[in-house]
Length: 59
Ligand SMILES: [Zn+2]
Image 1 (cartoon, rainbow, N blue to C red):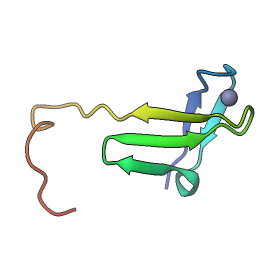
Image 2 (image 1 turned 90 degrees about the vertical axis):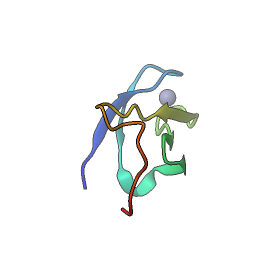
Image 3 (image 1 turned 90 degrees about the horizontal axis):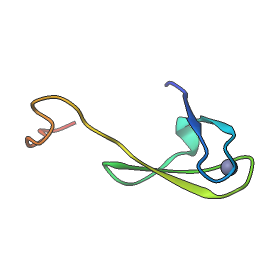
Image 4 (image 1 turned 45 degrees about the horizontal axis):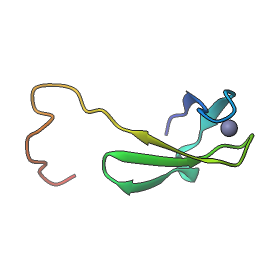
């Protein structure tokens, strides 16, 4: 388990994103509630690499 740091687009403060509090509405989207302003922030996960668009097998 790792922690990401993101800047909230609403209040501009840094958020330490804890994985156990993150919601994944779909596999490419992350939704997190800012602990400072309580706004729901949505991130797009950008998958990089030549196989990014390929089918995913299993987990
Ligand atoms: Zn915020």
